[in-house]
Length: 132
Image (cartoon, rainbow, N blue to C red; front, side, top):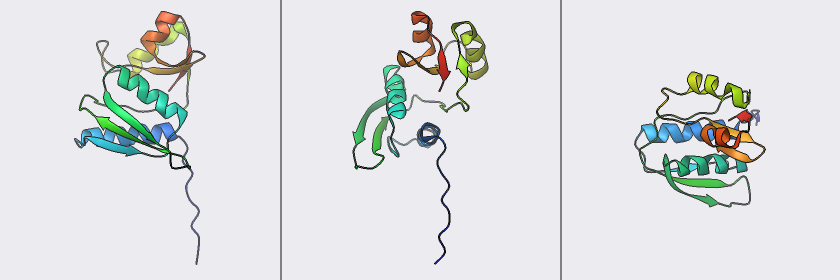
């Protein structure tokens, strides 16, 4: 028997967000994300805070873990930005203009020294970070 080499998953966050966006587009109410990571959980908490997703539950299978997310139909699009560009307080406006569809809605999520937060929270705290 020949063993085919498996492709490695480059970004757990990118896979999770793509799966989430696809399920939302198909009108699903619930979705299973795997594998799980601390970054994915923190990202989902930011999305939940802004009302884009409902409750989510972590399932510990003693491996990489799974997350069950309840969807509420408010998500248009989400995705990871690769590579994780540096973003300081002066260049927020540039990134927001490039990434978001309009100034009225949407969030750019950053990983900062004070945790994973959206760009408005980062602006309030006067902290920069890397784009997620």
